[in-house]
Amino acid sequence: MADMSHVRGRIGSSGPAAPWFWGAMAAVWLVSPAEARFQVCNQTFDVVNLAIGQWDYDAWETSGWWTIGPNQCADVIEDDLTSRFVYLYARDVFNKTMVSGTTEMCLDPGEFRIRGHEDCLVRGYLSAPFFEVDTRRSERWTFYIQTR
Image (cartoon, rainbow, N blue to C red):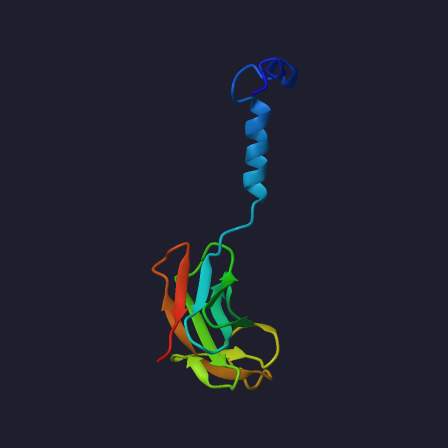
């Protein structure tokens, strides 16, 4: 094994952990990808199309669609959860409802982001019964879609 003791003085380090090293490590940590904060996993044999609804600071907002293959997961909210409740509506590729609930919210057949959940039809959107997920004020949550 080569003697590396002479290299130490050339780097400018006065000890085993130079300040520049920790600064570089902090920079790498700050730019690393964010962890998923709300993830949906499809545990069925069908491809699922998913729409979500959540309170976004001053209004309800729905968005979609995420396509999730069998035994796959999708990161649908990548920021810390700001609301206790997240709402889900999912259907398979044959338009069969996979996840629904009792909270009516707006959606659109194509890719969408809709502010507000009132008067969906009047505003030119469809209305669907979203399922309420109580995240118990957690910062991260995973929801599993399972065969009924």
